[in-house]
Picture (spheres, rainbow, N blue to C red):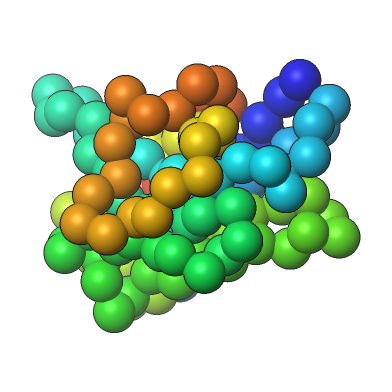
Length: 126
């Protein structure tokens, strides 16, 4: 069982990256998926979550309108498209799975996740 986050890298402010969260050993069809990030010296932050069906999504206020979460069932992968990146987006990004069917209204909590992948580093700098 594995979640592999990838797609991080160095990008200039205003640039874009697409993160991927690929699952192996289990089907993402039965799980919600969350993207979280943690910058040095800061608490882990829920960035975006998507429900099992894809019908419910959550975005933190800080990324709303710039980031888009989506899932590809055929590839057993969830993506986080990040546009107009800002220096404050710089962090290590993690994906995690949520075992419960959940409506992501106003929050996406790391306490609800039961399995985490290793992170991918996003650096935003000119």
